[in-house]
Image 1 (cartoon, rainbow, N blue to C red):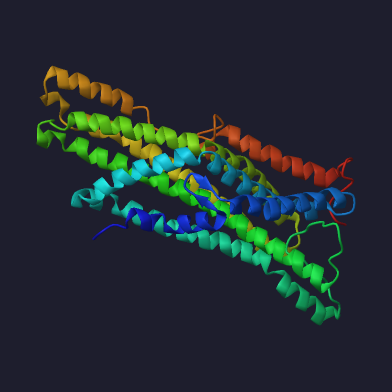
Image 2: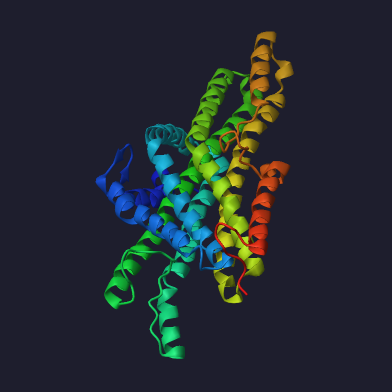
Length: 391
């Protein structure tokens, strides 16, 4: 069976980029208008709510706002990091596209990579659906809450999907409707920001991984070709290593943002689930599942590139190098030594992006410290905020 074309794999991401006004190395005015008129005002409005309500709202209510605010911050910072590195991204995409075209011409290579390509194509769709489901729950909750309160209490409340403060009253239908459209638009834009960056990360990591897989197969088959392709394999190995290093440079900031703010979101949501109101549990659990899924998928692809690059040394060792002449053995030894240092993606120098990073005491200590901070504030009340648990 055939594999999807390069454009088919990137189709959903390209649609999102067009909506945002990003076209390769060109950034259209639409991108700046979306940020200036929608995302940044919404972020300031949410922060203003926390500042103005700090002395009157209870701690759990304010803490419940952190996931939404951090999601907006994460989305904006990730898309800005990608836009700043757009030249490198375009160059990397051109490189992996050429490698992918070479793979698509070989039936054996297509069979090797087919599963990975189909998986990442389906995953990007599922990622978009999961995040859209989350934002729809928040965006359209007002359309359920308003009629519910009117039916049960005969009172109209002008409920907004996200707690914000604006410089005018929203206790009338026209201003409420304007702010409501502004709020849900920002919610959808943040989802597009986040899913675009994550989809780009998943797809580019997969393309680097499949080239390591193809190289692994080529090295194992050297013995059948009397090592005539050894030079090509060495050059391919060096080239793929360079691509993986470029990939790390591009995504180290988005990965750092995911790990840092993801830890804060997990702690905030976990605390709210522990002491919050049962009526808010569905939203908390849905948000927590989205955060955990996003961190798990990010780590999974980091683990994939770590595993795929480390298997090169296994292929070199099993290619019957001992049957070659001394010169070839020395060359193979150099490849073996280089391949024993696997490629990895990082969140700057904070940690490597892989499953084992989440079992390290350092990361657990960060999450535990944040969670204990929330518990102490809720139990004693903050002198600065004058808040505590609801009575």
